[in-house]
Image (tube, rainbow, N blue to C red; front, side):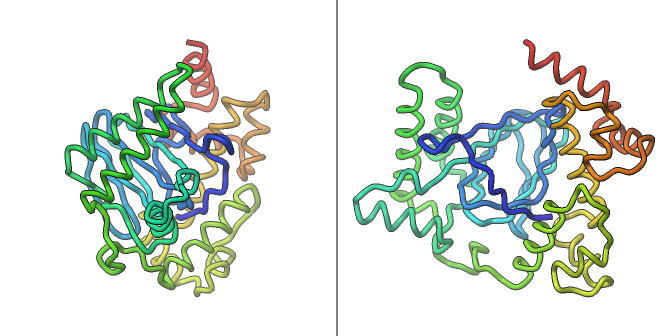
Length: 285
């Protein structure tokens, strides 16, 4: 499903955030969502299937992808390690009219960066941006901001973008609007009991049509998506809180502890307690 991710990425004075994902990460399988920021994705190893709106790409080691602003995106990994870098384009605006208009075009959806570029300079600069994010020195933020600007400059100079709304898939249509409504509803109410009628109603669709519509648009049934999101929230609480497994289960919308444990294990290949122990060990390293 899609969900407008409203969280602050990075900080107000440095809105860049890097995510490194392997099979133990709560968001290992990226659920459908969208945001106003630009997201860069690169594959470190394994295979990653990336969906951007209704376009699907296969990625392997060294592949990079651009999820443009407001694009609904999701990713399914297979024995994969990958990274995501999310940052605000608005932060990079300058007083120069061309730079400002170019960035406004990307933010507003009038322009879209090519989603899977094969230009070696673009790929190299993208990799450089990821590596700059990992540096810890006093000058690291200068490097990140500078590399981000160099990347945008190369995209503009080489015209690695499109203004063709039909080709770029940027044009908002009624299906995307309905999907976004249903995803916002599910994400806002995951900890409550939700029926198919509730989800269908949030999109303004009939129960029968909504089920097939949702699966076609997101790759999951409504209840599969809801369950996956509940497990994702449970993973975060297992790592970042002192709540018991029972408390976490009920706080994430499960009303049966044994079902929660069984479902968790089927998705994460570990019980909740095993997952928490392994994740906390990794954080201590």
